[in-house]
Image 1 (cartoon, rainbow, N blue to C red):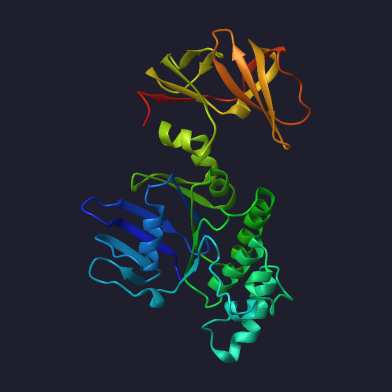
Image 2 (cartoon, rainbow, N blue to C red; image 1 turned 60 degrees about the horizontal axis):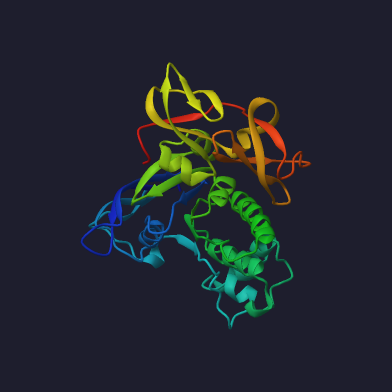
Length: 337
């Protein structure tokens, strides 16, 4: 295989298409996260790739095999695609081994099931029923089942959304490791920014049925294509203002930016450092998250901004402090996307 390629994909359910010319590629062995809000076309994209919904125009190819192009429409069972749905969707009447080995030739079923259960950390669970498994274990079985027939690509539909936070983080890392160990090509759709940025090799931000940006997670976060992408992929502190000669005046002081004219200045909460040189501020509140904390700061003009602080908390509500911006600010000319 040489990966999954999508060119000019248009698809929908009524007169107006949901997908409006999507171009994506997932290299062989790569993991792409398609990130977007509800209604952006994520689910439609997944259904079209799996063969559950027709394309209107465009082309889908897996390696050298065309799966759909308006005239060709390979049925789902012949596409060579594995699917991990949101809730795992295991057969409740089959054991773990029965679920993973479902549809495999009898001669190699036992060895293949054992190999995959070891890969996903469930060796010894062969005879358990789905009702005896935790949510995370069911998702591991679903991944093993999707990988069992050696598909050309694995599609994952928000597979961690129903899990609690600690288990979600653990399973994300384990799934990423399993996919890499297997050498699988995978596409994940999600509305969770942390999930997309933390799991995938590349992230495609889908908005209104088109790809607003495609790039490495760090690139999408630090160099967003526009203000809409910047606001969607992470927390942001924004100010309307005007940039002149590469400098913008903000309530946080003069910030170096690239661009000129009216627009929006954006910094991330983790860039706001307390103490030392900076503008005066009063601590309005502190929200403790365990691994870090959000400090709400009221500036001299009444503006309230958020700072993300790690380690021991240096301030309490009511304290006076100062705040400075570390690193470059982003500037987007004009108004919101």
